[in-house]
Image (tube, rainbow, N blue to C red; front, side, top):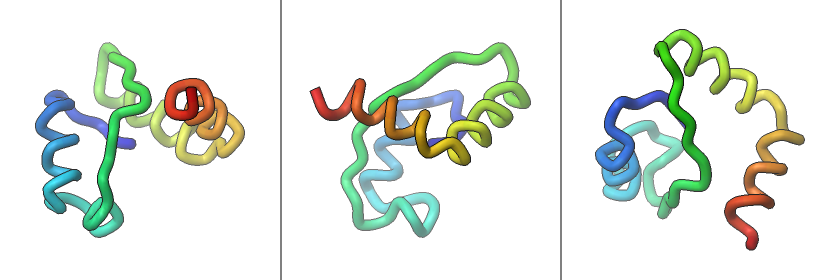
Length: 66
């Protein structure tokens, strides 16, 4: 999860162990993305998603475990 204006680069960086400590050593694949009109709105929505485990699991089940 996070904010970026270059999704491909962010995913590539995560998968090459560049970025936050949590992302290192793992293989990441994109499960969900959404465009927002401003960074502040995107960050607010990210905060909601990170703190709502029910919604996170719903997205995982819908997009990852087909």
